[in-house]
Length: 106
Image 1 (cartoon, rainbow, N blue to C red):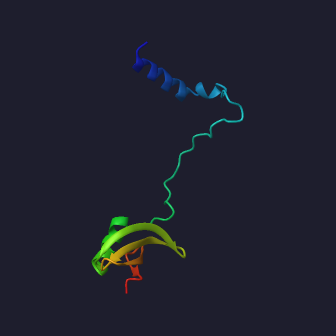
Image 2: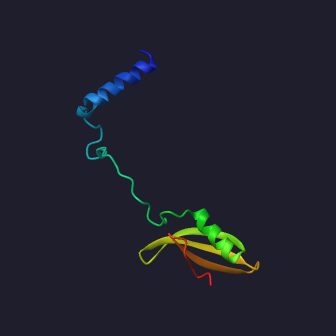
């Protein structure tokens, strides 16, 4: 039997539910049933604003060199903490919320 034919047979068995009646070889360790998942927002990311956009906002406002951009929560507000090197010697942390407002840039 060719490989393509085997794949078709396997798909037909899965669709018919025949494979579901086969006992799992490791009792007690059965895999969870497949359930359709909905997309959820990943905690720690700011919807509508990317890391690159947050870094660009801070760099345009303060100058310097962006060292890192990390997703953070400030209260219940997701955003990013952007660390920037100023004057080649000072490191400053600035919080950028999901709307692009900067806190700590003054």
